[in-house]
Length: 177
View 1 (spheres, one colour):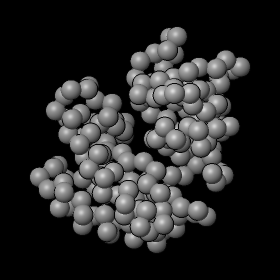
View 2 (view 1 turned 135 degrees about the horizontal axis):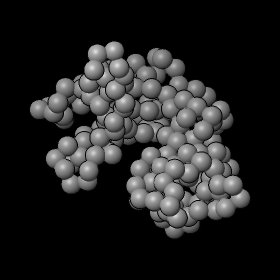
View 3 (view 1 turned 45 degrees about the horizontal axis):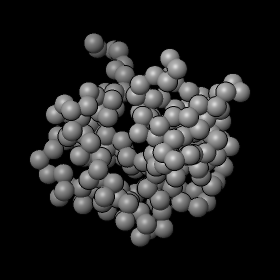
View 4 (view 1 turned 90 degrees about the vertical axis):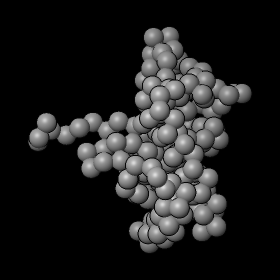
């Protein structure tokens, strides 16, 4: 397929229970365990971790944030420290490229608290299974109730189980919360 771009395929979208899925989940969990206290110690927040195939190979992408804005120096600082720690913990895994980035305008929503924190913002949510025949939602976040995310789409509020969310991001987010 020379000359054609391959689609990004997050490993978390692989079939649950497969070896690739389990290994990817372990890599993400390990990266989160290592990166969260490192980011906190540097005055930053670990926003999200992705591990996926891209045209250049496997990518382990770490999104960080801090009050004000994330600078290139912040990304370099976290990347250098994290790279050494991950090399030790992920020894024996497939080779990957580490990227550390700010969350950008399409900020990932990973934690249950994110949906309450960004209440009133526009988000895209993709679910694992359909809800009323719908898997892709774009609307206004209305907060949480129990373990459910409430989102208003065209004047209708959907209550989506948090554990049923495959992927979620804010849309054109420019603020600070």
